[in-house]
Image (cartoon, rainbow, N blue to C red; front, side, top):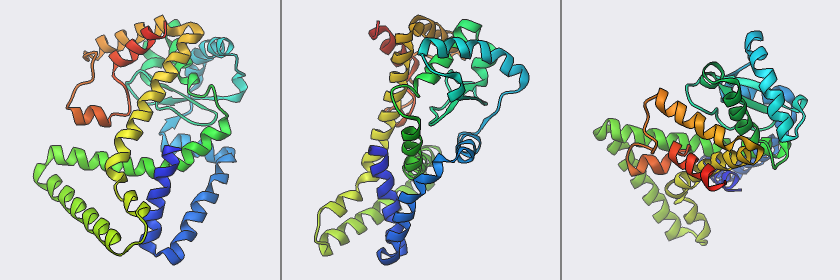
Length: 275
């Protein structure tokens, strides 16, 4: 619901730019567009172009299929219901994917022994447990405008850190623009609800990032319930040693607040807390 709400806000802003007379047609089309996710070809396009995944090769399938079957048996799901994809990444886990798509990173596939790879696949599968596949597809589809806005906010924050003069100029312009719009709406508007929506760029990003971190830790706990908790901890320590990373999340408080992935130590503590 938070993702849908802030996506609705973003689409409503675009409708306001077009003009609310015709703009609500844009909002209606966006709401009705959720029907396209039930087409299997659309789900494949989302996996390939939005998540930048690829299908495994025959050699990769030979390595994946045995551990995939073992993890699915322990999870109590039918392997025919989901499809494995590969993400070209050196991270432990791939991005959480909706629907019938289960992604594994290249690092996990080529680096981990069979038992550790099975634990990672169990984590990825855990993102799909406890809910309907069609509901997860709809949830992701309607979250796309909010995710795009979140990416834009993060880009501005990175620009402000990398090039302070340009970044501060852009940030200052956006802040003045928002304050001007807010003042105009408060002066000439009749409802306080709409002006509050203009505060969402400052409120939504840390909340949505926290929701993403929470989702990752919940998937870890589900995998631990299946019996993969200790193995996942070993995977995290192995990844940390190979990449010479600290257990805690580095960077400033702002970057920690905006991160969509919990640090290794947070994930280890969550698994230890789950027993």
